Amino acid sequence: MFSEKAALRIPGPTPVPPEVTRAMTHSMIGHRSADFSNLLKNVEDKLRPLFGTSGAVAVIAGTGTGGLEAAIANLVLPGDGVLSVTTGNFGDRFADIAKRAGAVLHTLSYDWGTPANPDDIDRFLTENDHVKVVLVTHCETSTGVLNDVKTIAQIVRKHNAYIIVDAVSSLVGAKLPMDEWNIDLVATGSQKALALPPGLALVGISERALQRIKERPGRSLYFDLARYAKDLSNNTTPWTPPVSLVYGLLESLTMIEEEGLENVQARHLLLRDMTRAAIRALNLPLLVTEDQYASPTVTTVSTPDFDADAFRKILKNELHISVAGGQKQLSGKIFRIGHMGYVDAADMLQCISAIEVALYKIGHKIELGVGIKAAEEVLVRA
Image (cartoon, rainbow, N blue to C red; front, top):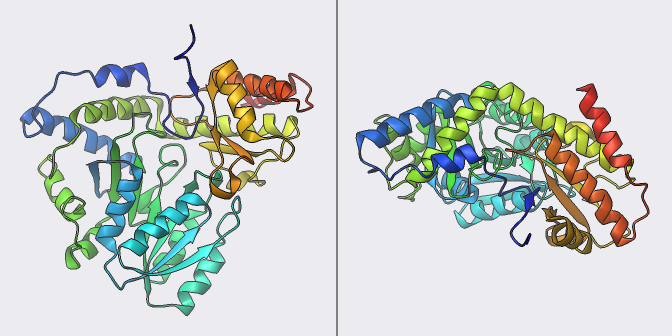
């Protein structure tokens, strides 16, 4: 009877609001028609304030990784010095994209769960002035750590370098104003805090970055961001867009606008604080120990005395709630709770209650109700 019932509390894909689902059923239109041009203009007008930029935001058929590859393909040419700041699996992937683009790659790597130290980046750029592009993951989805992009971007600009930010699991859920923080390129995906199905990559392009791209044209045809920016000025795209997803994106952006971006971000912080309070009350270790570096969109929990994947299996099969597991060296050692996009406090109370039951069933000693109580106390004080 409940074979298809599932509450997604993973860090993507995230639940899709019914309003967005309905918007995506709009009858198909031509992507070179005036109707699509009007649709894209409305989307672009709402995307710019979301990214905090006066520049263009490319709407690309692809996923978040495609957006990252687009950013690197345009700002990095073979032989360019690139510093990749890696704090987890997706930081490693970012570095791999740059390596495949022919960059002279340097890395600053941190223990998983530990944020990047901006002072290390400052020292590295001082000692390696040939490095002109820095890659940073805002929210490292594999660990739940939130890097101090604001400070890092200031340092990068001081050294007259460029910064590309992976905001795949942070944009909307966490503050990231491109222009105010001097960020050159920001890439995200549709299936995270934007609460859409997978299939869209969005890349914010600063005027400074666009100038560099025009001066040093890259090798990519499909991911040519200068072409995207040019075509956006005429309310069109270079290549065929996923029209239905763009209709869904407009509805998602409208819902965010109605709630207010600051309120959306405050909601994500509340859900994070509820979740972290519950996990602490259950005497489980948080991988990211300091709240200031804890992501508003995903919380990562260590499982030192039980198997994380066996716990997740009970949670999914018996209680119909999906949380994510660990990646690479953290496989079987952690579980990750997504709380981004179309998720509210009641959803998290349900998730926390189910976590307590699954812990009890797996034999982990807990007092039922202590996690829920801690989360409720955070909620009622908000």
